[in-house]
Length: 115
Length: 114
Image (cartoon, rainbow over all chains, first blue to last red; front, side, top):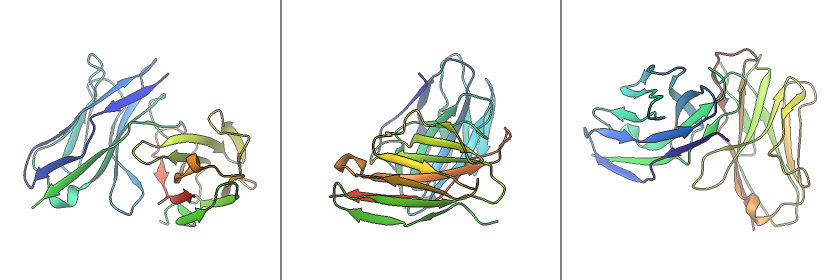
């Protein structure tokens, strides 16, 4: 079945440091890939997505590139801020969008950014 | 635009008791999901509705869990009787029926079974 593996946290960084959160997946077809973020006390929010190989999703300074050859979708940000402290989830869906198919999530990575 | 609403936000019950959670999706969203998120894990799908019909309930423990979406809008998830391992956050999400649209998540209900 489909699955997502992401690096375990917690990850603690100083403000303005470079962030990488690794995510790899196993899927039978050509899934769409997503990063969701959960800020303290809030619901899950879509951060970015990519629907086909070599697509790059980007939002709020975060980027991730869909690498079919390595089955990866690593999340990166060049300079993190305290406000980026949250739990980040990598996810996939079977079809090329998440509009009406369930998501398969990784376990989540907690990021803490200190000033 | 109002988001996905869930209630209650928190619930503490003893094992073998019953509990119900309510979800009101975003207006116009035909697809509704219930996910279970156990501490330290990612959300896992329990059941998916399209309008008031069930699309996927293969991971719903049907001996104790039930869910309904009678008029294709609000949904209720029930656990009866609860077990200790049901302690989790229950997330409701909704989306438009057609592809290409994002799933929107509610804030969740945190259930503690003692």
